[in-house]
Length: 192
Image (cartoon, rainbow, N blue to C red; front, side, top):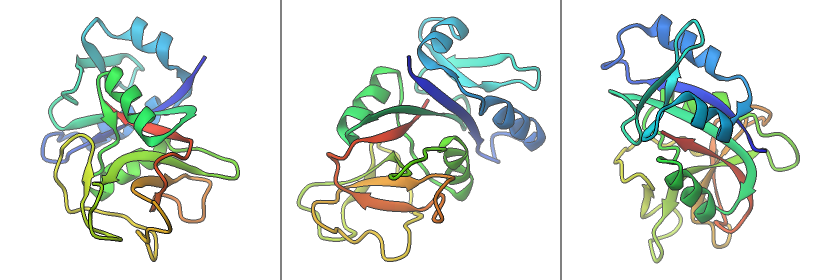
């Protein structure tokens, strides 16, 4: 059985009640069984948007995020970047797309990876043949954004490093990004 953690990020322009959003995010970060939870909580073709203050799930058509709101889920079975993206797509989303500091904070809220490698895949990767170290990066979802949160001296292309990972809450560099080899096995954050 696979566990996940949930968090919700709201675009301030489309979500006027920030207290309600904060309540949803804090309620949504408890661990739960993803495969059972998703099937039981949302009708076919719908994915979790978040939770009400009372803990009731709010569902939206998969892939929409629901009017500027994104739900993030952390999956704890390590996979390569490509396999993690394929799993997210199979569930109706993509690896997390981070377009603002508030998105970064919401993804970090579910990124509680611990251990010797305290990083999780996000949906940022570099196109093959791009100028190194920082050319050709883009989001797997196709979204465009100039926001980045690279750790100091990153990306550095320390040898075949074309996929981005985020440092978890347990890291001294929590929330910052690192370029890493796409074949490494990491936990990962999906966005729905």
